Length: 479
Ligand code: ADP
Image (cartoon, rainbow, N blue to C red; front, side):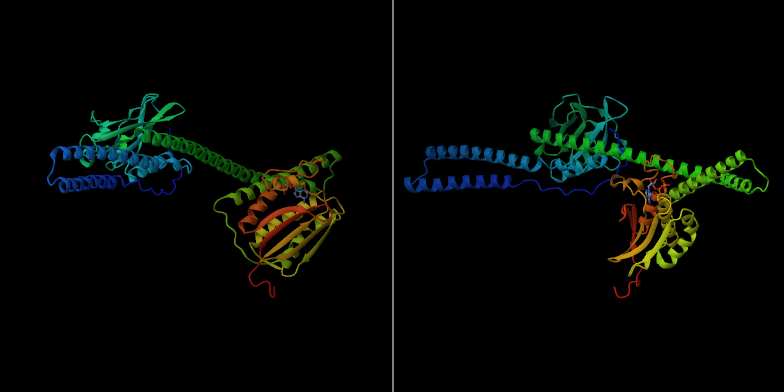
């Protein structure tokens, strides 16, 4: 088993042990003495003397009854205690955390419930098949754990053994100053799937609960289960961390690549533009080649910009600065920017500001980026001559911005997937090029502004993209 830095959980409360057996025993002895005194008094009153023979028989009978009562009380007390203690480690397995935390908590629970005065949990060493290392200790001197030498792993099938420490092992003799020499020691092997995985070692001045081997076996089984869960939890935590690190490395690599590609791309784009504007006559083939070069470079440029946007929006230090944004002014700017492209495809763009939907709390630049992306998608995925509408509507404390188009819409099953990076709906004609990154960036930007973005059906069959943002404070006079 290995140990890692999986997060800890809060320590559990310990339960009080079952008690009261001693009081019952004292009560039984007092009752026996009372019975003897009363019997003696009755005997004296009847016979006018104490008959030693009769009294001796009475004493004997009373003592027999007392021993029987004490044995019964002992058994009852043991059953009660076993019942109370037999599940104290069970819920360790239901809230998994790291191995060391689980082991330490188990010991703390056992000691808090007077099962022992000191304890160690040791687990199989990753580097040796026969040895185990102490992973948790309680009731031991500070720093003992760090210096404890490995010990032989219990044999396969080993069972609980309890006795006074005979061999003065260093794991026990270190307790002499606190518990005394030769304490009672319980060796409780821990098994998983039939294999020995470690040992729970408990020590105390008195044998106490340690005499109950059935209870110790049960506690050992619960502890082994909890440690198994903890090992699985650590493994999945480590896997998650590794995946996270890989994902981070991937993002950094893509970001760096996009950054490096941007500079040469800008020069190529400039040369391609120059070539296209050349006054000298180009034959038809050369003209086609220059056009293709230009288109290719533009597409690459878009891709690189999208990649940079995604990397930037996913980086930990990326922030947005929300202010009150007046939507009519923002929409007018966006309209001006997009008008030429819309005219080229003879598409109409209508704008409508709903009541109380004129201002939102948002980062103006980032909101503009998102709306440009949605309107450019609407333009690209709607056939020539189509209609696109940009409108706002107020909802409770929020404003919804809708972008409707009259294209093919988005199948219901893909309405979440299109927000995943690189995902593109497979269209047979393949005429619209893109990176599949725009909506992923848009969602990230909107969520950073405490907003939501989703897609639904537009009334005439196209797609309706909705962005919901907080309404700007004071912008809803009379609402
Ligand atoms: P891109 O458009 O660059 O592929 P996006 O992330 O902007 O990337 O969009 C992801 C996918 O969602 C697109 O490939 C397209 O299939 C689909 N999509 C986006 N907007 C629309 C729309 N208005 N109508 C139909 N499909 C759309």
